[in-house]
Length: 228
Image 1 (tube, rainbow, N blue to C red):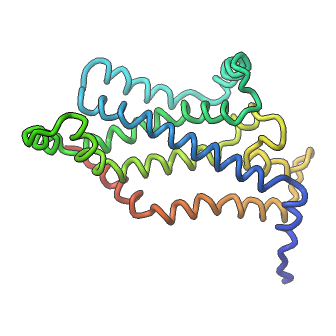
Image 2 (cartoon, rainbow, N blue to C red):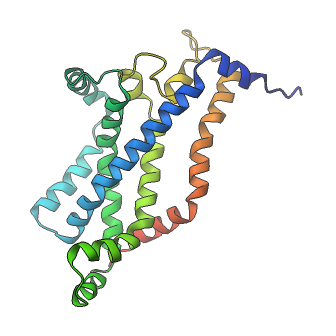
């Protein structure tokens, strides 16, 4: 009945939302890019060379997705403490890369298998070396799948709460999901107006990125769904 933008102003006054958004954007972009860079050549090897090592790697991908967060948080905390990476965005990025890598690898293996190996064989017949074939023939065909995988990795890191809550201590280092949680009081009572305003702002980066690369994401999902 009384529309107002006061909740947005109050949200920014109560919590460091802008800094949290910058932190989340930095962490999510870095983690998704590093995960894709590592996973792409691994996925190519697993898809093209189906030996015992590739099967073992596939098994690792499946098993790793079954581990709950709570099971690994204590050893993970101790490892990062020994590396002096507690309360560090670099440490959180490393955690997100490791956590996103199995999923990214699993997705990209499907995209690589969707690329007919006959195209690479034809390039080899024409005199192209292995590296030239990968760069000029395979990589452009994998581009939609790589973009789709990077987007899913980005969204996972952007929305992640538990690792960020445990590993980041100071407000200026905390990511957006942790800051959003601070709108809920000690007794579980939410400051609903500022919380809703901040949550709305938190959805904007993902929506903008998704809108910009929507066509590539759709193409990537369709390409990964087909096996030859």
